[in-house]
Length: 146
Image 1: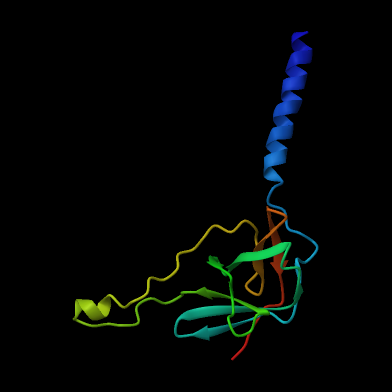
Image 2: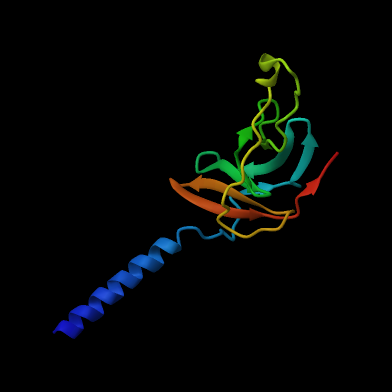
C-alpha cells in the first residue's frame, strides 16, 4: 500500500512540475498578420515598429515585446492604427551640465531583462493575450530602417 501511495504521489508531483514549466511556450501560429517589422535608431534610443495587416481586436491584445535583451510595452500609434511601436531607451546621458536642473532631464537607460527564450539580434518575442491567457510569439527577420 505504501508503494502504491508513493507511486501516485510521485506521478502527481511530476505532473505539477511539468505543467508549470509548459506555460511559456512559443506559439506557432501568429496572433495577427504582420507586415515587414523593422527598427529605427534615434536620439531616444531604439524604436521597434510592428505594422499589422490584420488582427482580431476583440480576441487578441498585443502587450509588450522583448528585443535585444530589453522589454518594452507596445503602444498603438495614434495616427496609424495598424502600427504598434515599442521604445527601448539605450542611451541616457544626453545632457552633460554642471547645472543639476539640466542633468535631471537625462533619461534613465533601460536595464536588461531576463528573456523567456533565446533569440538572435534580428528576432523579438511578442507578448500578447488571447482569451485572457498570456502567450508568446517569435518575430523574425527584423531589419534596421533609416
